Length: 305
Image (cartoon, rainbow, N blue to C red):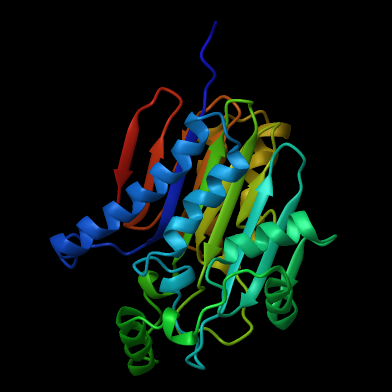
């Protein structure tokens, strides 16, 4: 009897990651965070659990880690607040849930999942989404929970250099996961705090189904990270799937074409993807992308640069 394949890919954002500017301690902590995320999702897949549960678990770990720009580590808006976006999609049913511009929700990915499973909607935003979270008893945190020194310094730096364009590190910051389970089902999940000093109310590509998040059992599951406005205009995540379904490209070709398309528009970033055979792709056009995977053969990898 053939062993059933399963695979998991995660990311913690793309941008300018310079080995010269990163201390060994910070790099170790980032790698540890990625490993914990992989371990959480992989444990579910290994035991025969669903890809949907696996991506939610993997993203939740990264939302709880203040080093990543999602959940607890969300960046500050120009109003010195935190506004988070998240989405999750089931490739088996094409059902999806998303939230935009939410505050004080410990794990926005849990709220996105609840929108899918416990409401007739695909996306809720702002106060309405937060009211829904309270109705369901999801964990609400004090504002201070999301206020980290690292993110405050980033806001101050951006404010002090208004004449200069935002760096990749300040524009980008997202976490995500894609998975194939033993039943052959695909899923994707993405969560973000947006970009430093963004205007309140700005929503990026992460919660937009087909732009930053997409999964379809016919083709692949995708989670993107980068300049959200460009990924929205490129309909990036769905485009990977469409190129596979209609142009018969393989996953690697389709993912590379889409990142080139984003670049041609002027955007930078990357994406992670897995197809129904367990093949994976992790293209990016920045100097680095926090990423990791456990592939269908059991090979494990964590990388930054």
